[in-house]
Length: 363
Image 1 (cartoon, rainbow, N blue to C red):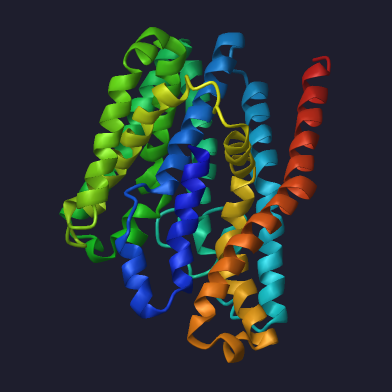
Image 2: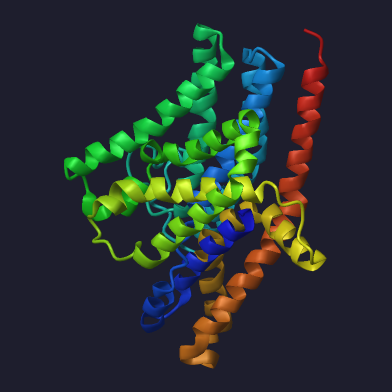
């Protein structure tokens, strides 16, 4: 599922390398799957299970809350800041305009309540995830302290986080708030998309506490998921830009479709072909590095510089886009594998040692 998510993201952004006449045909082949929504639900499924394990094993103290944050920050922040520095330095060295960079990128608030500047644009979804990692555990800690019932506090928070963004989108739509710019003002804003991750958290709750139903209905849920994806494939692009579907409803449908995939996929124990299995595992492992590198570093930065230095337009003419696309795929996977092996994985290993050391310390 993670592999499919990152491949769809690469597909969408790869079209930016194509000339205008081909770009329209390229984007007419819409797979009906929003890779970012898959990532959101997967993140919620992971985070939800981690929090539920903490609830079952501890009283969810301030120390537990801090350890949760440290684990997530070690996983996401170091490599993000490394790539951010590379982009800033690279654009300075090659005279790229970096005027859109602001201090807000340092704290993931570039799109908290308004569209982010035209700089490292793909990080809009990372901001949503980072704020979810902060807000949901923090509110859970407070609610758990008040009502002393972890399960009940968890469910109440799931409902609250699911309702608030939907109501906010609905309110904005009813008041005509930038409905013609739904991608920037509805799809890519922290406050309007937290519910997408919440569907994954709900899946984690069902997986932990309703395992019998989770397994019993997995085929039905899988079929419903395919029907929803089919709807998005055949009809998702037919709605007017300012339609209720684009501004409000599509995010719920995408997330529910992703949620319905999980019961079946969580019971799959392996892929018969070991090479196919290895491919899925490899891509899923480096997916975060791919996400951070593929657009701003490779499509916007690396490929234009290579074209200019080697004067590739002179040799390939109107067919240069073919070479650019091949370079995009190869360099993305190679650079992401290197970033994962030599930075992302070592930092994750360091995190595990730090957490282990902290948990072994006497009070």
